[in-house]
Image 1: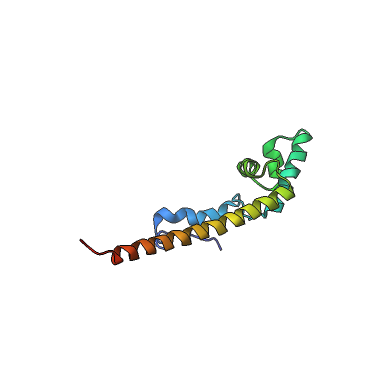
Image 2: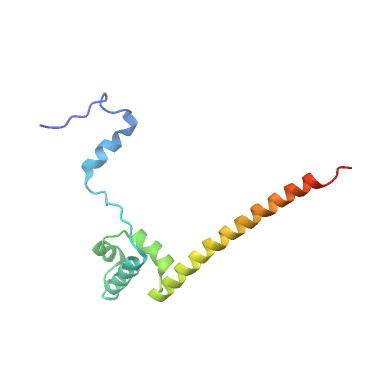
Length: 122
């Protein structure tokens, strides 16, 4: 039995793309890759490129878009596993230090406010 879409079934005629997008089939599923997986895929693409393949076909071979490849290469290009773990440690330390600074700023504002209430008004 064929599926018919009538205007009464759709909440808004402007949102018909939502119904037809499922029928396309060419939409790639969005995946989340770990940093180690990204490094592995970048190395695999580099091997394919060294054998004479072009960037779009090498990226298609590992299942990512060439835009994703260029973004990953900008972020992780030339990085090894040790540098990746060092980057993670630095990011973690940065988050910790930002929290400390925020708490100190809050303490500073509280002290300033209490000081204005304690000063005698002339």
